[in-house]
Image 1: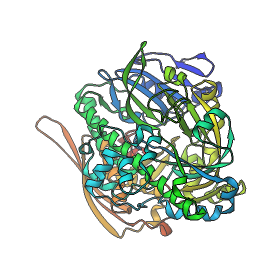
Image 2: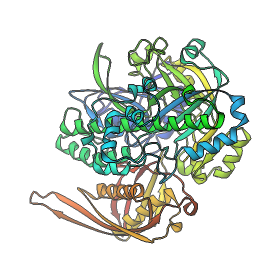
Image 3: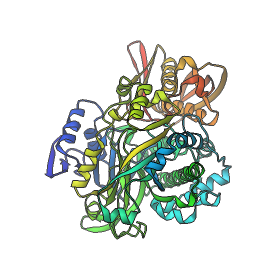
Image 4: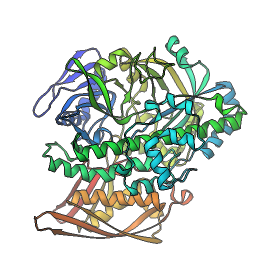
Length: 479
Length: 144
């Protein structure tokens, strides 16, 4: 596969064979070398990107600097498809629909957090349901579940979680319109009945962080970020609802590929024409899953606010909802294509929306600066707050990275440090981890992930999403 | 026998056996092993179900995803599996594969099971169900 370097940090895969477009990769020479190394394996990021590029009606695809192999499509990919000619592809959004990060600004200094760190960690561990088979505090009947699927985080407000004013600080204001609960099976609803307000496990977490450094003073001021203050990141998605939507629609899309005679290079890229009945139903189900994830994170956010209020005696309303972003999504957005702005289906898998300044989808308070992007590091490393740019709107369909990206497989990571040793190491660095599964921790070791700073720098220097603040982990709650 | 295989972000599972059913049952053990040690899950309680698909690969994915459905709805982990796979063709010649399963396990117990990670779903990635020599192989990538 020929890769052309177009300019610093921007590479392009040559359009060959059955590819409909020449996809781009935001990277540096080191990342490209890693991608080249991967080519020895059957399912390399480059091979998956090449495959994605053959999808009908695709007008663009871009991989961001945290790219690594997924199933069908690389993780760290944004695709843009023509609404009339294009397809909606399962692998381009994935099972964990609207996995993302919900974040809070807590009016406490890191010194104040340190004074009650152990207490706070233990209370968060009690109050935030996480782990295999662990249900949440809400058990919803069918009609309540339908409300969640249609109204997203707004429904959580009606049940006494959070405030209506917080919804503005969420992508899509916490609810994507057009979700039909009938597009989601009763099985999916049954599976998720006690999962709204639960963290899950694996790479999901609730992390208390210190705002360690400010890079962009003007943006930090508009965003309300002060160095030394406390930030919380909650990383999770639509839980079993999203997974079951995937299970239900995989065979439907598999049949659609045959019905509509779509030529796909591998089965993991099952899809349906966007305008087909199957495509529209699947899109509606994704919207429903998206709303469930918004509600999920919003409820956990409220539980976390209440925990801080309990431990520190502060008013839970003094804790601000900073922003909520998704990184496995499917939406209709207006972007430039062949010189004119048009509605496109944008699918993001392990990539985050990062809209530039003056975009009406960005909260008024932040609008002049650009949309905040929260990029999660691993347990032992920094996370970052970035902001979207005009350049992103022109070059990457308003998209950027979501995290560091894995550098090591889970089976490889298991041969490294044990979970117990990892806990001790992180404690020595001042990071208190409370995990339901100590065994599962080694798969999430910092060494299993790429260097987040390197990945953030690529996107910053490429002008796609620029650095606003750096966050340091203090407490990490995991399933 | 069952095993896990390499994938950057997720985990590959593979079951091998002298029959297709045995290969599926071993793949199911490999799925449980992602969550907890199979040996620690006692086969105390049984659930039965049936899944259908248009081919053996999709049948494997449906079978494994049904186990994950039961994990969330019944709060159960499973360690012993009995399956029967049949197929029939309709008048148009389209084949349907049917898997009937009885699966044995117990309620999830965080103290007993040393829980690891909660898988999301079986995927169509690296999906393979085939007979090689005298051995059936059933594998796919599990999204964790």
